[in-house]
Length: 255
Picture (cartoon, helix red, strand yellow):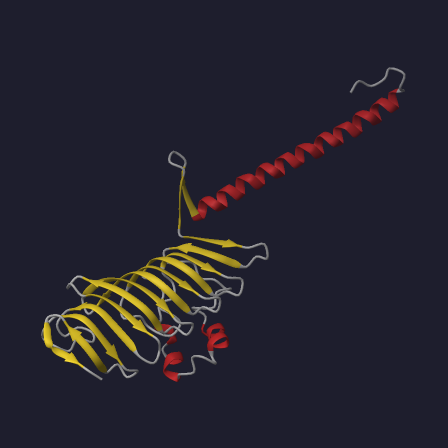
């Protein structure tokens, strides 16, 4: 802005002085912003490699938080440790499940549980695992799985497994299965397909159970050297009370 000619020399000097101070201030702010952008980018680059050509970010882990700053989505290989997550923290797990999991042996072996898979884990606001997908999925909160599992799972709002789908290696045999569980981790429906041609559906209401399908010799509830194809009814102790085997009519029994 042009200075009026009517101003005295002193007034003109004062106006120019004030404008110079404003210029210095603006210039200083610009320098601070540039420094912040530079060091912020440099800090991010220290933990992540950015491929600008393909727009690919390579990093070891990502934690997404909600508006309250709580960890809600964990991504990594393995997933990052989280101060807010219940499973994987023995003290928090005991506080959450002590009334349901009272076995001393469980808590003594807690540190052997697989808790950090390679993939994505979603937590609710209380820190319980709600769903996850990836490789080497975590054990359920009731104990070890029978083998390494790849796939996905869903839990209820208190961290109890309610279902899952994936592959698992059991006794050297790889199988793919779909399971739906009760609120306390007991299997309700389980469908499985094995490489040894065992294909079956297991139904369980906690008092009795039924197996429908085909089982290989000496596998699971088939204690025979012959293959089984049909149905079995079992009591709460897993003792067969009724069965019908299409491969062996003589194998039919009544309760």
